[in-house]
View 1 (cartoon, protein in one colour):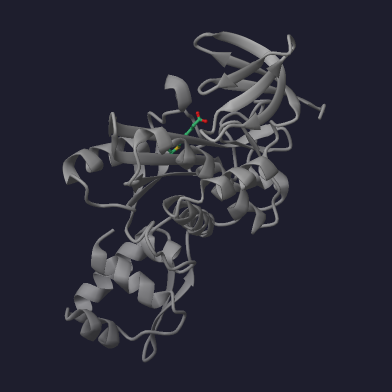
View 2 (view 1 turned 120 degrees about the vertical axis):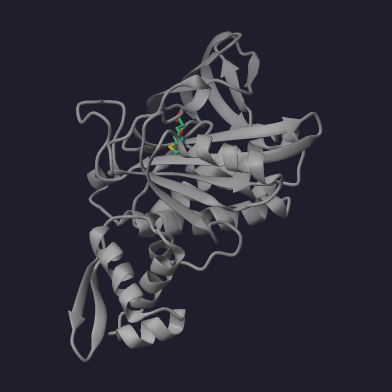
Length: 324
Ligand code: BTN
């Protein structure tokens, strides 16, 4: 969207009638140019009433994630000051990685959000598919001032942030290690943090989140679910705003080195700890009881042999019954 169109939208979102003359004056452009921006907004699905002598009034908004719609819901401090909304892209993570490579330390907090992805990426080299126009798919560019050994905090805080944002809509979800978000035993949201780092220096982190909102890839898929199953259907701009606000709060805790606080919240929201799990790692499969997470965010499992296994990377399946 043209920056002026975005600004016209921000003014219309205030809710009052705005005359073409006022808008033209604010932007130092002609009334005919303002009409073009109004026409662009209408073509994007915004319903705008025009009454002679009164001006333009926004009546209804589409379920899109233009910056002005997201900023109506929260005032960013560091994440999402700039939001690029794309109708389609290969992967928001891939787009943002290109931006990060080009901008050499700039664009921190930039968000790329897309209606659909043609090559969505999942954890461990998997693909991520989502129902077109029915999911929230976005990535945030972060420059954490910590070495790679402390990046696990971002993985954990992202899951915590999603849980807390959804709680504000009255939806209770839980976390499967490390950060899958589950609703009623099915996956609702996946998180992928991609990193560029040297041994002792992090160049950047692209944090990508995919949340099924009003549909999930295959309705018959027993493994996944969407937010509408919990009886809520927020507009995606409002959902993005709450998640970004919550991410920002938790990211600031992380920057403030309050990792133990993030860990304690993760434990509280976890649906893994105290349950029988099987971890699938590059070294092999391990079954036992998930006891805790370590200070490095690894999963500590007490194996059936009584031995303790620390799993730093892998997939986990969880038995529903709690054994703690
Ligand atoms: C997982 O495997 O659970 C992680 C899925 C992460 C998907 C999101 S959708 C937005 C962002 N862009 C991507 O290509 N992947 C992440």
